[in-house]
Image (cartoon, rainbow, N blue to C red):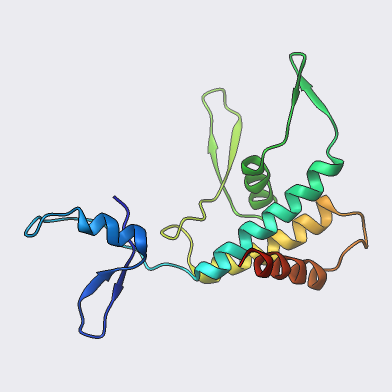
Amino acid sequence: MDLIIVKTASGLFAPYGEESQEAVAKVKVGQLLQGKFTRMRNYEYHKRMFALWQLGFDIYTETAPGVEYKGERIQPTLDRFRKDVTILAGYYETSVRLDGTIRVEAKSISFASMDQTEFEALFSASINVILARCFKPGAMTEDQLRARVDEVLEFDK
């Protein structure tokens, strides 16, 4: 059970949001719960990151070269795109595989793994990657891409 809680003016913690309220309603009075809590980042900024990745992915898929593997056409996925942008932005971890090759993994963006300052730096670095890899040179500036992300978020409200 994942809960989002908020500290109230009385000093007590209360469930935040409908899903958390429903989960807490299912807990019997006197039942003990144990959990590890992390301070959440700015959720609106989190939504901006996903809007940026979606915009970049949409542009990328329009121009992505066709790739086949074992006779089957392989389609790009948003999840792989997100991980690749994160790696290219410099946010990755490396490990050595059994065959001695290096494996590069995108760094986790979970609230517990990345604070707000690092997340904002990843956002800025991701803009640079998307501009360099998904758009034709000069097609869009950083400010224009940021404004486009904000437009998408306004439209989704």
